[in-house]
Image (cartoon, rainbow, N blue to C red; front, side, top):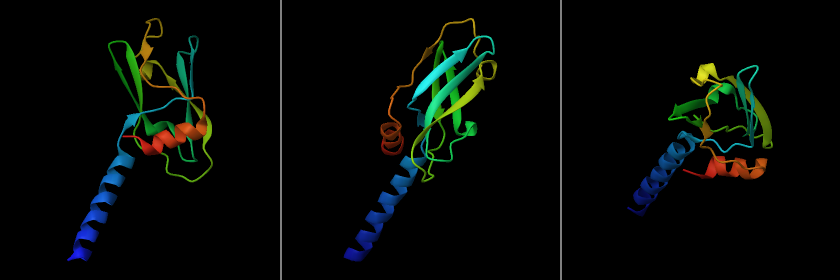
Length: 120
């Protein structure tokens, strides 16, 4: 009977761990820049080898932009900063309109990688 409880307990933990690891969450940014002439936004994020532009989605509401990572980078390379550039018009943003970024920023790739894999 103890074996059954142990299997159920471990299985439940794995299920919630996997669900936790795949949940969308706002990205911890390492940096961000804007190019008005090109009408682009460039984000700096941590990658362990597999992060692509397709891993992100953007929520823009009431002049507030939130950058969301749809899935964590589960590759095993050393955490490193990468840059990804997006067209503002593709995000529904007029470059002449002021807006805020709701994401948090962190300057350390290792700390950002830790947060990416160990938060909500």
